[in-house]
Image (cartoon, rainbow, N blue to C red; front, side):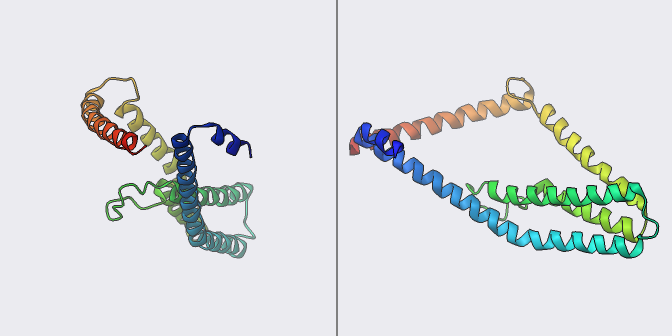
Length: 193
């Protein structure tokens, strides 16, 4: 009710712009919720089945020789699979659909989907073959460190380097073109009112 009262105080064109922006934000939220629901309905049964099968295999093959370390690793691996499931679902919801180029886009799920695959390999490898499969979990912080290194090496905002300087000049040219388009659009809107 208070939003409507505030909108009524605004002049007519601003009311329409506010209403349009609220509707557009709701549309984006609905689209993200639909993508999240779709991904959840796809990946939840898969992750649940993998974890259930893992626990059944642990109970079947390693019940007599289960150590404290292995119990901690079971909890850790199930937790990592849940974390990667949540990451895949959130990545589906936050994926950028502006380009509408499905063939060129990376697989939705990103690094979390990779982590889910790695965790599954470690789960079943450690039960069926050897506890040495736990060493593969060291790939997770290694990949994270590599991505952090590339972020810093690629340049942070305000850090000059050759790559960012070339990219900033391209962005300035693009932003000038965008500003011209925006000004023309704004002028057309003013003429309509």
